[in-house]
Length: 257
Image (cartoon, rainbow, N blue to C red):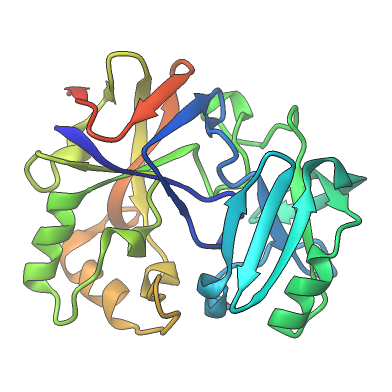
């Protein structure tokens, strides 16, 4: 089994960066979901309500983030996030930093609502039982791993095909039978080890086409027909890092069952 793709989502619910290698910190992939958009009440904003977010591109530069849509772009420097505040991700209230950059207006204009781009503080903790609370702004855990062969299996059952990107993974693996990932206890490369904490219970987010932003109810409905578990509709593995290091595309992965 090997790493087929590595994906970093700097901003929660925006498009990912596809990378060939990336640093793993104690919170997962560096910069992954370190930022998010919040409304006037400080509640997180996602594609569940605003699927058009798939059309906003993001790049990481030396000084900060650069967002682009069509011919418009805006930069948010790292050092501009200096206004302390609180925000909500599901049931968690987290310590964040707001910015005085032009990014807030860029996103407010695009979504036609007043919103802000915020960054999680480096030392902020979540009320999570996993990874000692060292989780950025992802829904549950630092890593989401998807098996490409499991996606291929689904597409033989589904009326409309999906891609691994529908499931917003950080790591896409290949070279292993469909759904073997359900039984993993731990896994990793020669340098980076991870603990498989639980299956990922899916929501209507997978109904958003990651390329077009079009929404269809079929992906979640059809997934439920094959992957309904006691706690929900499962697909993919949620994991925590054991140590820091570098992950690389095409690296071999070993598994402990």
